[in-house]
Image (cartoon, rainbow, N blue to C red; front, side, top):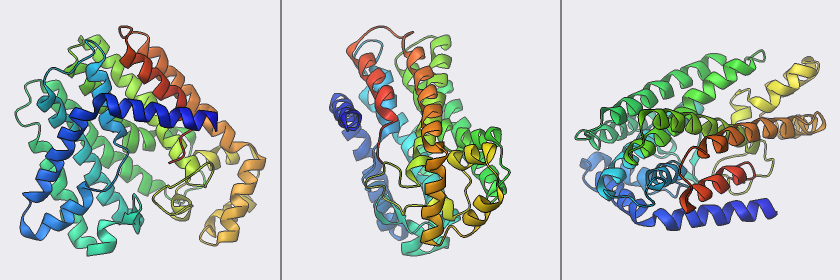
Length: 331
């Protein structure tokens, strides 16, 4: 409980520190919704105004402040953040269609409210709008980073679909999926934050590695939360990934050291609540959740090591606390 309280206090402090640029970026996204064509306006508004953690923007903003403890051009930084956030939102709209998810962030998903055809087109529209925000960006490295994210998101999603239900998925294949679907956006956030802070190319690349480790850890914790382990207010159904046939790290670790047959049968019947509960019981007994959390912690530690290369400041201490407590988040 101590760690959870500390994590929440760190997030609150981080939000307060970057609130002006966070508010500006939120307003920019609302304007996109309000200026959308009539057939899209209400549907896009529903997407951009959903309550989210905005961790990607917070990471970008903190790194943008980390060199001189200030952000000189709020509008420029906010536009880059909006581009990343809207790229993320577009990917979520499409993910919900693929996964058949009824809820997103505690509300009906776009496809469950309006159908798959509208959801596909709404996701495409949000993706296109995300690019508009950086059309006038003077640093081509930011555009390159965004293009990298967009392509990696698609590649990661395709690999995940190809491996859905595959009980023989390797640790390396799992890592490829989460590096594409989750970590790639955080690599871009961290790189762009470093670019906006005017760090040199070497530091920008180091910050990209920081984002990679943070993103991997973030997704591993998400995968643990899907089993209901330490979860609170997830905004989606428990066991949703499991029931969609996604073989994530806890199961991969189980299969590495235990007979597969019984667990494979349980996974095939994961839509049954009793089977899902028995899967969790077996994973707990085999210590797979703690082992997965240890791997996440290792990546967070590597991200923290990279932070030591940045100039000492209150912002960087806050980032350090952010990474150190992330492993105990509950949603």
